[in-house]
Length: 414
Image 1 (spheres, rainbow, N blue to C red):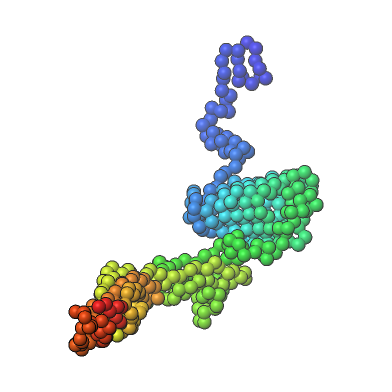
Image 2 (tube, one colour):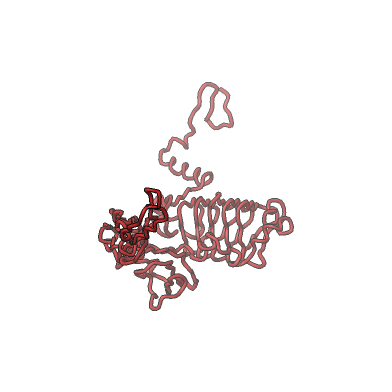
């Protein structure tokens, strides 16, 4: 029978397994060799999780991938910060959310970096990429230290469709195909982003950058009634702290936490690992809920006095009020009780105010009516003779009656 390659592996009518594959103990080694030469290990951070690179709890498999000689492909979800340099050997870095590196980022030969739309990468140190490194960014990339691309021009690529901030005044950038997005001569608009911290401006991105990956946490609701409070705090291992209220430093507030008892915008500046950070402010609100007037004073009719006027009564006693914080500071009315008003309708506004200055109002109408009839006194009787040749008397002067009324006499008829 004819043999192929003298291996005893094939015949014309059947397939024979080579002898080496008959040893069961070799299979794990064969699989390991296959994986090491074909597929990279995959590391994933926990989605929607805020933590540090070195904390094993940040990683789906419970183990961080290390910081040097990284050969795994690393996928960043959530908000992850690293307080060490990150050195990728051959692994790729994929960022879907946020990665802040307080140190250097090195991408070795053939490593790749991908920022998906909405992703943020902040390198508070140097960025170095090796030969044949491909970068694709649809998010935000900020490098505060030296920016260096090594290797020959044209090897690898840098595709930037997002925002790129390079603080290095003299970045070492490759030329050639694939680097047009970071070539100032080809893309003048991209060079506008090669600046310092001021270029971030007063934006949400700037606020996030200046606060690092730190934030202020509240112990409870940031809205409270008079006499209430909320404790604000941040990480407790900084070198120094200074708290501010509405941009003004608070004397003695120099620890990692502060108890706010008044409303306003509170933020803290801190120094950590020699770097200065100004954290985004947290707004604290006092009682902002207005009292509720459950029963307003009733409308009233008032009889006019001898001067055709009425007096405003005290209507506040007829008002029922409730408040979320339980205390009503005052119930007032306008016009005030005792105010003299004329006939007709006068609207009285009643206002309830709580201890935080929140207020609610309702109205009641006062109608002043003239209820007093006028008085009249007839003139004296008159006796006259009839005209000559007539039974009637003409030209008789009857005199005028005497009238009086508190609101005035409109007319007198005879």
